[in-house]
Image (cartoon, rainbow, N blue to C red; front, top):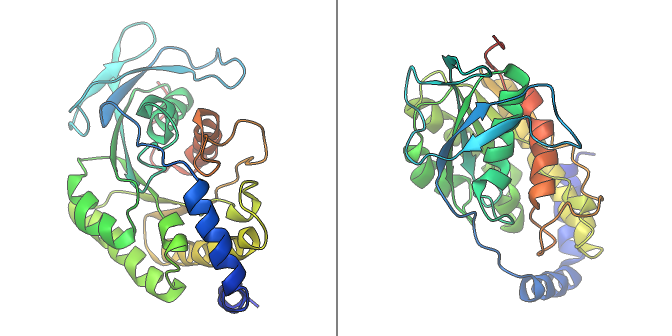
Length: 278
């Protein structure tokens, strides 16, 4: 029996307990702001070998308004110019960097540095995201903000989970999102970040944690199906160590800088079309 079929009966049977637990979490969880600073920047490669203790092998120089310039060049080790890989991060609160101070410490910054370190090429990143959005809102309001990119990473699904969106409806909405991205940026590869392992979030009490975990798995199956059926779309499983100390921000729900680093290290392997290091 699939997670999609298990999740709904469990939700109904435990509804009174889940409602109380959900209300307590909403009241007791601090509301963290989105990451501050520019929504676009450049990561110039300075070293692709000297990584220590998981630190980034590239340096970020945040420059507003530079994302998506066709034919752009950046600085390679030794000072020579090289072609820029253009990365867009689209979606909800995690894409918006909730839990950290700036996008340098969030998903976009870490993902750009990981890509630069692996390819030896500069990476130009952009963020089109807002806390609290769902897939429909993202399609209508955030996709139009995307500038030209070589890959779009989509981080969505948690608000669908919290809104109890049905998997069947989510399937259609995610397909429309992908189609809207393609209309905006024809031919661009899309990476759909898989649902986080909500069933392992230590801050969530049982049975709420287990039920949300089941529902998250159902939505993740939808993401896999949509990616499988669409050319140029990749589903990236979110294999992240949520149990380690310091993974979460102070709200116990969004990643900290440490959490975003681990997530970016997992996601970068799924990015298609990375230019070869020179």
